[in-house]
Length: 108
Image (cartoon, rainbow, N blue to C red):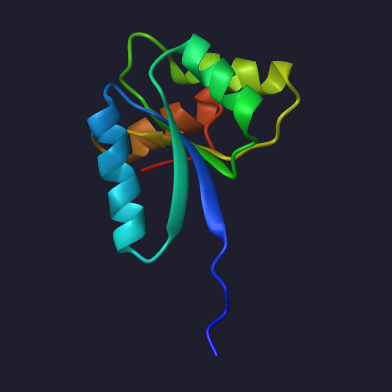
């Protein structure tokens, strides 16, 4: 008997919708059921948060339209305790430390 899989609700903050879809597809390929909303700026993030409380937020680190610190500030302003994972080009120690100091839960 197969146990029913719970859907992982995500908000993915990336430069393009295609980048966000690629991340969701990687997670699906790893066996996760994924439902995600895409945001490229603060207005879209606020709209996504109005529509659903995510289990996890994935945020590209190098975006001009929405910095990691802004996402952290918005989550704090709304009193939301949602894990925030930064997505960077490299996950070396200095970049991990920078992401953690900005308020991310981790960096991948």
